[in-house]
Image (cartoon, rainbow, N blue to C red):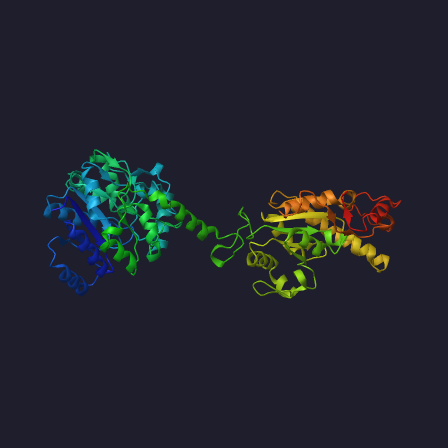
Length: 566
């Protein structure tokens, strides 16, 4: 007869329960099974008959087990009392569920516990030390009454809690008890467990815990502190929970993950996980090598799963985790560059930049007429259309899709005050956005146009106002993007130096020093053009200080051919 006894609380998948129970008894471990009273009598009788040939499998009195109710504690008490009575050789009692599965040979667990004959393995922490309660109550679960089911009668549950708080109603904790909380799944010694079940004050304790919220996480955890001589405050059962406090379900593709945990038992195992049941219940040679149980080894995987579920992946939006304005994560999937004023200031700038950096260089993606994809394409990865109406229905989703569908390839696009400005806030918040702006460069196309000057003045005032608002937005504390801003006058003074900086920010595989720049447009007379705007009542301040004597225009002529470093 083994020194280890197993208590199983079950309510469904009874064929799997029988399979696991026989696995325990094959190693000499007696098993007492509690079947929820909600299971119909015909099904229950059939289950008993199926297990009748195994003398090590016993059945305890049945109780109704609702989540968070006293019934789970009563079921644990009945089954534990029976296993202590029927099997006097048992030294440790292991509480498990019908969804638990042994991960290592049973003999290893028996030997592990035999080396620790006085140790109780039960997660037990005071309320002030508990950090895992999610959306629930801590100390109040011990000082208020909870006659209503949290799951089935939520409104009554919440209303009665508010009512007790309003009236200052408090329950008295029995003298000598310090409330503790922890995992429901424990492994207790006969001495500790029998002391709890045979305590002269058990009736008083049971009466008190009947109205405690989720007593299965506090009854044994609290009372074990009264009698145990050595508590290891941890569970030997691997049980992981999501961000809402619900247990993770393990499936066949979690096989290697469960192996790495070195744990003796895991829950919750999906009843259809045939590969897991076959591997861990029949193949002793594939079992884990002896090691101390260490569920922390796989915590990183679960932390990543929780992060994916709650925050999603950068640049991939879905209904379940749409980005929040307070979220500091990147709003796109991959770094990209936004250049403002460059295509206006340089001739054939886009093909030059594509050749210099190897990036995919688009025109104005948010041009009022259409999205100007690289190579003048009308469709892009993910069947994204250049249609302005489709793009402007949700500009942020459009840009996110552009970056997501081309992640791994550097994207660069032109932007300016003439474009759809709805995307500006997105750019300001996105950590992946690398923005370079030559302020006032939008005036160059106006300067070279054949429009009436009155119309030019009105358009210049409109564009300057829009660019000013954009710069103010980028300057706010919320701006997470990397931004470089030059006035047009400052940029034209040293274009090679500024272009070198832009290419370095893009991570381009260019030589250490840029040797050739694109052709600068002819700016002869641009200073007089700005003065005429002033004379017409507009103040073009974003361009910087352009002298009226055409000093910059003369200098620009020397840049008209590709600029070479000597």
